[in-house]
Image (tube, rainbow, N blue to C red; front, top):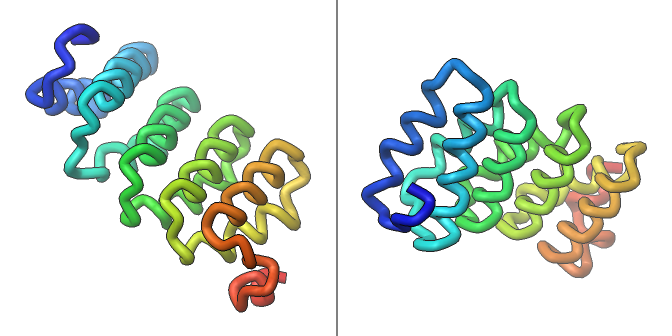
Length: 148
């Protein structure tokens, strides 16, 4: 499947990634899908990726956030906001990065909260980058004032 780079391969990969009981199989299927999306850029429905944000495997969550970053679908904003508070720094950082890439103003307030309150420097640095990407004047925004 790594070599095919054909949109027809998406459906079976998504099904395998979401349904397999073994974390390693899910991780490999999502990794293959990640490469496939990079090659063809074809994801019509972000819901399987959104569901993968809740996977028990942090690598699967990170891959899902990275893929959502590339497809930039606003339907992923709220689920990514939830993941922004994940205990795993890599997952939370990937969520912040994806939120910045999507660019939806709805992410400003949760990103400000992460910027101010998260004690992990990787998270508040990524939150600041995401905020700058969404709105260079975010510090003066009403959402920022409400978050404080």
